Length: 461
Length: 175
Image (cartoon, rainbow over the protein chains, first blue to last red):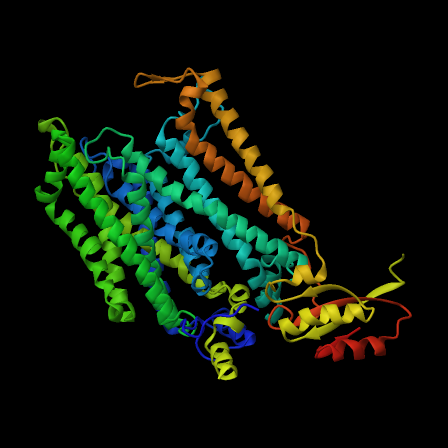
């Protein structure tokens, strides 16, 4: 059997048995919602309603209800799209890349992080559809035969690559997530007391029985899916960055965009995982599974990726100067000192300075400090996309068309509303799905739990 | 061999190491241990039972290659053969010149076909699909109990099997 050093912090606190894990994870699904869940759900649904109103108004009236103008033709819509897609990346990183690296601490957090990925990509996709202006012809982005002559989509365009990247990412993430859920639904099915919950979880669990052959295939499928998802997640944000990088707009036309966007995506995604899990572990009393050690590890990822993002910001500035291209230089000087200086410096403060606080292990292990810093990072990464998109556009080559951009209530409604949409989905998930991958977590009870470590300590001395 | 002659009896265990060790013990005592149902994957169980390696990753590779070929064929047909566009002075007249721009979609299509094809194969091959009624032998077999399936004949002395299985560490015996 796999042995683990006692020096490593335990991944499961308390002397938990397999059955304790089942009880603790199934409790939120099997009990009634508490007051806090109901309050949070009401607020989230209110946000969702605001989103429905704003989107309906946009689709009914036209894109003129947004604050866009001839110079700034892309603003909050694409900012929000990139922000949400980026947030999604942490879930895949945790479940796929950490699986390949055999990081056991992923096991308590992968399920909810993957759920976050799926809901974040749904939110991102809504911005793509709503910013099309005529979403009912959104299928024009697909390579379909049509009646307009032999006109196909242009496969040289990064926007078409994006259609393929996002839809592949979304569908593969769902399949990866659901495959892992099947054995856990079977646990709930076998415990179900009422006829209806038995029937629903029987359908959801696909009649799973954990025979040796099923588990063998299950593990192989998880491993290969992780291997496929790893380059996939890196490709998705690279392609998103190419929407900008392949253009010739100063401030967008940058070769470091793909790695810089990927690092930023993981950075913002982990911040959102922290924000969510710090609440989830408290509300669902899962502190024994999502421990301070887990929070510490995620903070280290935030520190690393935050530093990469910081280096990327400075590199961009340096290259703008070093290239000798005046337009490029102006774009960057305008970012830092122009009328949008406040957005730029919000971004710098939130993304470059705040994560550096995590060099202190005291702060990394402090739940409250982590929560606050994670909010800062979420805000900072939103500003990053706003800065890249709006400040690069608002002063273009023709001085007479220089202008400012400000959103209308409709855009604000769609953005705030999309957060409502996200939390509605996430709160429903936390009520009906097992939020921790029970079957996978049970494999480390004998090696990495506090009880097992105590036992092996006693037998050694 | 008709179904009436052979049937299964089950030993219920509550520890993964005990159940894995029991396979060899019981087999050496002449019992036909066919399968172990567990709440989580047990490392080395497939080896102990003598299961062949799964070929599902070979399937995934074939699906991936199919996705790769289909994507390249699609882009060649649409953008080079059927209607070559000349956008921004960058014409699409030769496949090899356009290939770099075709890489992202080719990659996504490879992953899409490999991932979905593999999961669909897994579900069909293991017969886990919505609507399938599970065969539940023990109410806690997905929670913390391990079920060992042993094939016996109609005329086998079950009391003897039970004593062997219990001696190997089973907490319960079901026939």
